Image (cartoon, rainbow, N blue to C red; front, side, top):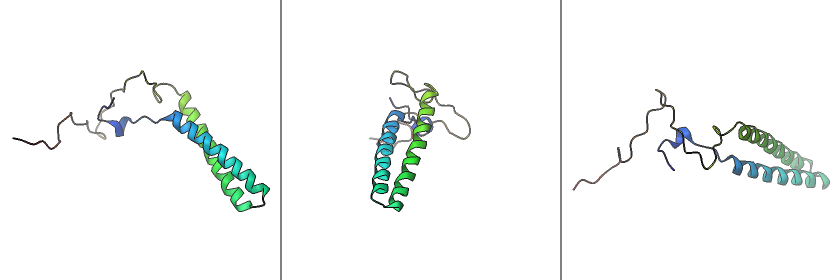
Length: 103
């Protein structure tokens, strides 16, 4: 369901981000271990740094998932009406501002 105000009220797909972060952590950790075994310290360090970034991202994702439905609503929760203030103008109504052909 689209409201027309998605840039302001966009929702992050945290479950997808979670699994992509787990995938990156596993692969970077395995690559770092493999490069350490074959004596390639530069590549092992790069992969270990990427694994650390994936681990930090995973922590942020889990934190946001635990904050509750306001930050990660389920599929059954409709989009909430965004807060309108001077910084964010109200989105135009459907059809308003679009180019229409006049007969």
